[in-house]
Image (tube, rainbow, N blue to C red; front, side):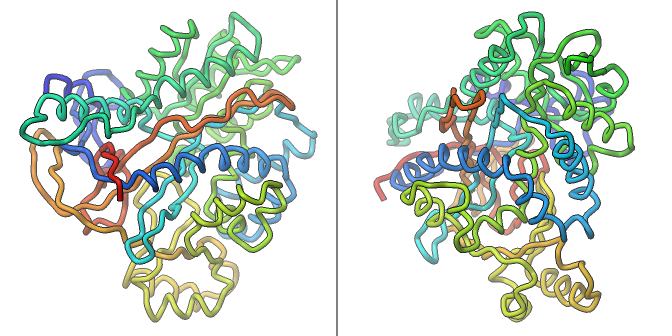
Length: 457
């Protein structure tokens, strides 16, 4: 158990952490919440999820190149969602000047649950910006392997059934190779972070790997600092605090709270206007919106972007039911049976979805308001994973509760013009939460970090 103190961060956003805990390393430090033992997961579904990662990587890239599709699909959403509208505004400006991103880097995570009703693996969402916990998630996998080895006689579990999790090293490798493609030895990787970042230690693992394994220097800046210290030179080079930036890696910028003023929006535009490699670019960011996820689930839409029929079939098999609120029959069904659906706004980070009685009330209110208010949401089939008793460790206290789990598969994608340099499944993130909780974010305070123990069924 002596490794547990290394699985650390500065506390979930929803707790009252000590003053300066998000700004000064070591102040208000707590261990990240985790499960004491790995969660059982069928090997067949694990294999299916891993095989999907490169296909989703390719899909994100293809969709990102179709600016008209992104603008058209989100045209109604932007009328009622200011955040999406601002992102689309930057995207439109880049389209107007025919801005090309020759080197494109994506560090994605596709999240799944096992639906007990249909015995199938169904996608919750695809994240294309600020996919967190490659660092701490990898450590929890190591912790569980250590515990299973140390207490093998007591537990009777085989540590080799826990898949190796190299998310940190694989993400670092993708960032390092992107930096190399930029071809400027004096340039740095810039990690965009929140002003009071509470998940700094997950990020530090990546920074350390980048430095030690690839010799790449990383600077950490908030969007406000980028605006104050940054400029784009005539040749397109982004310079921040006097240093040229090869890769901008966003670990912030995914939610409205990250843009409290025009300063932050100005910084986001400045980054997009530069020749720096963005992870993600504004196009990749938009591909990860809930509305685009719902559009891609429509009949014949995947065929617009992918050619391989087997790949298309694999993606479709993982899609849960997804509908726009234009579908009156589905809206009627959701009002009558709200427990079978989830109402999702265009938001990332946990704590935003609407369930049960609140879902019914929200739909009735939106219908009464008429206009474009319905376009701010999508409806999704609710997935019902099987609950099981789990020992959870939070705040140094171990307790048992009924839990359900969500498997996130990381993917790394890097291409330079026509050359695909990386397209891999890159580790995983298992999150486990008390079954009575609807939301699932670790940093948002809803879930714990976990790993998986592969089973034959």
